Length: 249
Ligand code: PGA
Image 1 (cartoon, rainbow, N blue to C red):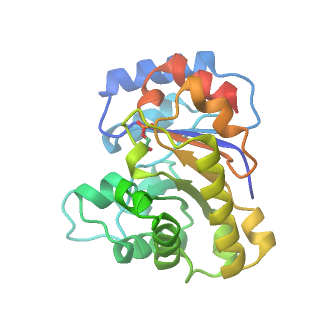
Image 2 (image 1 turned 30 degrees about the vertical axis):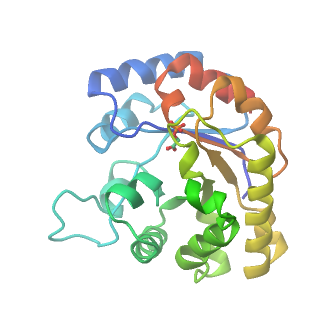
């Protein structure tokens, strides 16, 4: 179901103590909102975060997961392990996983299928690099990322998919897609899903924008009709900034 979502991707930041401090601050300052609010601490702090947020509406989600059920995959985490500690949503396909850890569309398709098979909700990230945009290939690229990882899914699976469009050139760079660029791409994404499935399904998918969202630009980006919220990196590490972004939705 299409809902408003603000999610913080903490990446490889915050020790356990720092995680607890930030979560306590966020819980205390959390504004009243209909939006879903999510945070994604690093793996080792997920259990602690789930415990800290037991009586909070803030949801804890994972930054990644492996496609195999279990076995000889040193350093990896399975869907079952996440569910077992009370985490039922995972980010899959973040551009840093694609760029630094060799995650291809093919691997991501396997992860999506594995997550959904276990009932894990998927926050699927995708987006073009600067060269793609400069050479006018960004729509084609985004379409292929969606097609390769998601368009073989049954329509019923889409109730557990959240999309996060994150142009790589805007991640951690301070450069943001303009609200118009974000809206243009989000509308394209919705149209592409509508063509692959149907309009009702496309209208039901939450599509988040990610890439240097800050308190100063959040409201304008979120005001666009096809932007259903944000996946926030840097600004989610500072309670007041994240809270201001939640207020903006
Ligand atoms: P950023 O990161 O907000 O620091 O640009 C966004 C993301 O990587 O999800």
